[in-house]
Amino acid sequence: MRTVTGIVVISAALSGCSPASVPSEGSAVSSSPASPLPIADTTGATSPLDFESFNTINRNTIFSKGEPRGADLADALIAAGFARSNVEVTADSTTEGKRADAIFVAVKSGETCFVGQYRTKASGEDGDTKYLGASVAPLATGRCLIGDPVPVE
Image: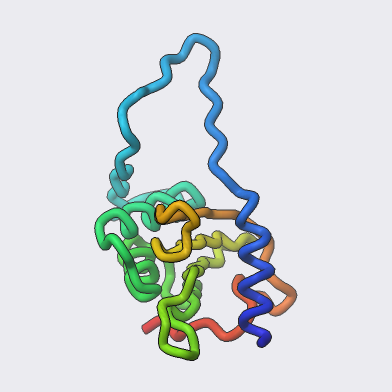
């Protein structure tokens, strides 16, 4: 019950999030369809990975895998340079063995948590895959996700 409550709390927090992009005065608005952003080469990078990188990695993983598992999201973040010890992910299936409506992945970066929510295709009212990201303060426990995250191996 505690895990479900935690997921509901985080879902509520993320459900109002959407990327805001307002074109500046005189800029052209692209009519081409959205495509995944390239993942920056972080080898030898001098600055730490940030929230934008976190979201880009997650979106690219969703795009390339179609219906990723939590481990796919976690593995991609780790491969891009986020520390394994700072990555948390929720289960991909319910206690009844059904696909979870949402998978949460989070990375603690300093005193900030980057939290991503991937809603599976089956859970979207319009049948579309949904991804939302938020940058929030860590919980009092020091972790980013409520409940018992799945071990990241």
